Length: 195
Ligand code: FES
Image 1 (cartoon, protein in one colour):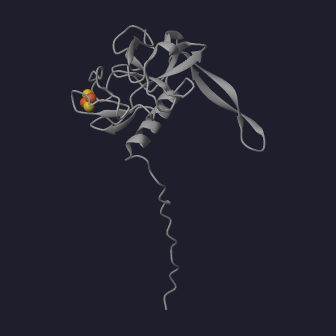
Image 2: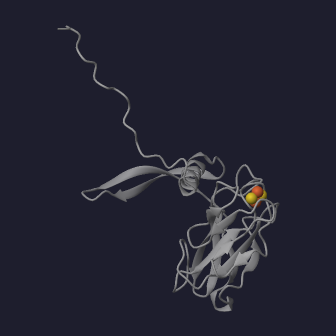
Image 3: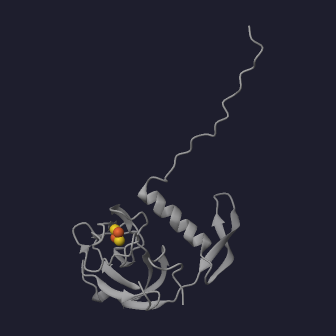
């Protein structure tokens, strides 16, 4: 009989990974972006309701210009309207559209009005004119066919890109629609607010 004691298996537990899922990559990279962006940011304490008690946790805020980009009453379902945001520089061209179905980040009574940057996150293919009313998507990209779902924060449906399309965050005041931020990094920029 052997005196050797058995060594317990100390392999690290296998945690589920989202790394291979396009949506997972999208969420991770956006979180990283929001946490690492160094321009026009400040650290503030925000209240989180953890169930039992309110806790103060640090959060990083990025300040974007607030820009009026249209009127809700003027939008027609599935007819995109162009605008530029957050400035008038390269790759700022974006689109505002009433999808006719509820969407992530949507404003309006049906939460169906959303806005996205027009440039493919892969290599900057121009997606203007590629809106598809039947699938509520942008694409296919003219360069390598990436297609993005506008009902789900611009996640990739298919193609070469692995980051979601930057979503322009909207606010509604009365009938006026304002762009107030960008969720994701615009192609060709190291930060969205470069001067
Ligand atoms: S640039 Fe759009 S898929 Fe490559």
